[in-house]
Amino acid sequence: MAKSFPVLELPQASLRQLAVSAMDNNVYLLTSRATGSQILIDAADQPEAILELLEAARPDAAVATRLCWVVTTHQHWDHLRALAQVVARTAAATAAGADDAAAITRQTDVAIDRPLAHGDRLEAPGLALNVIGLRGHTPGSVALAWDQPGQPRRLFSGDSLFPGGVGNTDRDPARFRRLLADVQDQVFATHDDATIVLPGHGRPTTLGAERPHLAEWSARGW
View 1 (cartoon, rainbow, N blue to C red):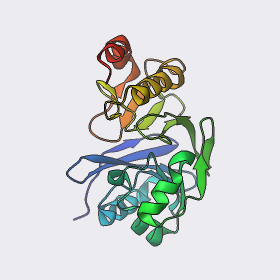
View 2: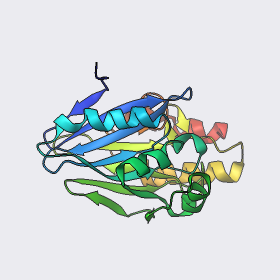
View 3: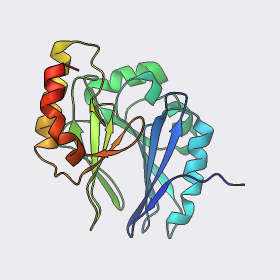
């Protein structure tokens, strides 16, 4: 029996999700209904399960599907363990934050085809993601904002923003302040409260749920 995955069905595209590994890493897959183009966010682990996810999304499109991009939100090992296998099986192009690209290649032996910077736009036919640089968890961490007509914005935040706080900065005050400042300036100041945050681990939240706690996060220092 084919495995089922959580799916959000929208008129122009679908969003499917897979949680992998003991660390509950989230893998996200966007599929354009009109073109069949796909973007995968974080090939974290369990490559065969990710390939099943791609297969399950085929009925979401009116034409044959094709994985165009695999985006890695940051360089940590738990977000890229399946990258080499997925790229080898699909011939998808790769993207990651420019300042994390070399570290990702060292760990996976996969070249990063598109180094990303804050303000970039990553596109496949029928799909587009706006790149938000969030330094601190790693130097090149990126979040990805996805807009669909009539829907709240969805923000794939990697490990930079979770329910209850920003990502781990190893108790380094400079890194924490950098990440908190980027999250405040690049996310909370520019996105409305309806924005849905889809993190690299665990459950989603909204900016409206988290905004009242920004001062608390700053005071506690993590």
